[in-house]
Image (cartoon, rainbow, N blue to C red):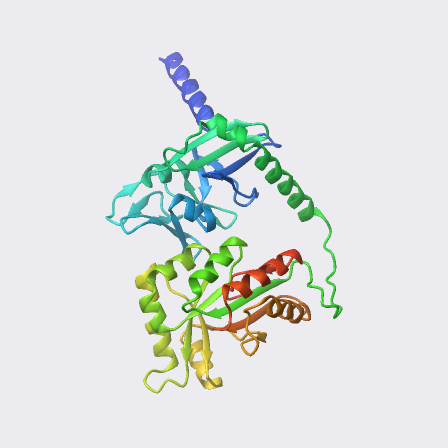
Length: 373
């Protein structure tokens, strides 16, 4: 009897080891969506957990969201995320629970895990739920995890061979990132030379409006983020755009007008959050108050909102051309440390693309605004 139990235990151990290959110190897990090999990062690299391979939920943003047709929303507590495709295919993840639910309340296993502040989801279960194909292929530097729609037209091996050059480039970038993280910090250049300080965070803030879809396209193209402040009417009427903003990592805030004769600032903020919750199942504490005094700002803060006071107001100049972009970059470079910029409704996709390109070339980072930014 004891011999039989020992044999059974050995068999289980062998199966577990086969299901979750151990990663050597120099091996990595690449992640590809459709034909694109995604950037390689230690923070978002696929990982095995309890015999299941997990991928970051945030992979379903930007170009991946478009190619796979699955979108991502992260809750304000950073522990809950939503993956959705259309109106009827939605998964709700909570890292504090061992299971996942859909819109009908059906339960799926396993649940999400949290690693380094990022929420990871089980690759096989997510792929099956959204009708995607999923595979793991051994490659020269580790493994290639590949998500795609059915009927892609290449076998796992043929795709891995075709993607070998892209994986080599991602791997080299990954090594450079590791080296940079271990290098001593370089002091900031605070001289007023017009050169953007390397690594400066730029928080672009704008009013959501008719051009927001094109602006989101520009942000996706450069893998950049911004903050969109929305009126109550916009929040009520533009559910698709709001879901796209949250799915692509943009900040959504509420734009309130203190001169409104019918509603107080706090009433506008509460109405806006109710509309945002209906569209995205989430709320925001970010607010920007126009035409307000200290009393209006204090009322919003007392109600629990984080009121943004930009470092730089560029509404008088706009961001609609290459010259606007160059001028803004020079103004940003004059600030020491990170900068919050208010563009209002004066930005368009042409000017934003020009600015994102020049900022990228100067190693500036366009980020989503947070309460601690």
